[in-house]
Image 1: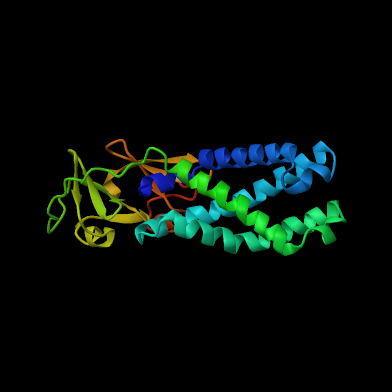
Image 2: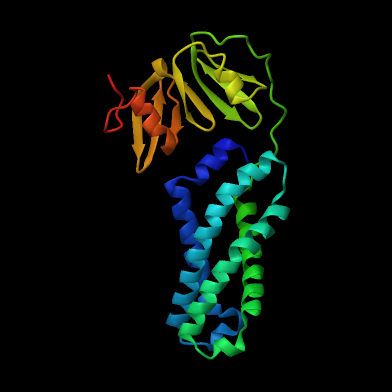
Amino acid sequence: MNRSDFDRLNTRRAWATDVAGFAVTGAVLGVVGPFGSYFNDALPMRVAYWTALFVVSGAVFGIGVRLIWPRAQERRIPPVVWVPLLIAVAGLPLSLLGRSVAVALWPPLERALSLTEYYAQSLLVGIAYTGLYVAWRSRGRTAPAAPEVETPPDRWGPDLICLQMEDHYVRAHLEQGSRLVLMTLGQAMARTGQEGLQVHRSWWVARRAVTATVRDGRNLRLRLSNGMEAPVARTAVARLRAAGWLDAQDRLSS
């Protein structure tokens, strides 16, 4: 997984796919009735309970995965380490919530199922499901061949369009082609020599290269002169407005 892969996890489409998957999995578990829940109630109630539980839990774990995964990868911490920790920490309040709802629906469970037992069941399901989710999202993303890295220039030329982080490298997109250099984004930005702004944690763009804005729901992107679209972090929108790049409607200022 590289930074662009992680960015795609935060798109509306990725979230819609995930939530749909959570709902379907919950519905299937409602039909199967694991951990003795098959005897709790009629099918519609079981399906409703498991579906709601999985959608809420999946959303919480989904946020956790998106926050932790890229940072863990930068520190070379494998999923086999951080996934169980995420489930253990986030699973406790979710277990409290889930058991409370279950006891409210089926009062005999208060004596039949302790919080410790419910938490253990939640850990089992959470680790299995989240582990499979991380493996699925990682599918087909084999380690790339060693990139052809160039010597960083003392100063980027006027043909620089944007800078994009790629793992530990920076790719400089130029009017003709691109160059990959081993340096931080901050080091690369210090050598631009032209007006521009960091619009995302992994993107810097030259103002002269911005041709339009593209709105996709709450997400904003800048269309560049080479046809690329650079994502804009929500925290950077105000900075772009203050710099005169965008108007009040987040359109490109003339």
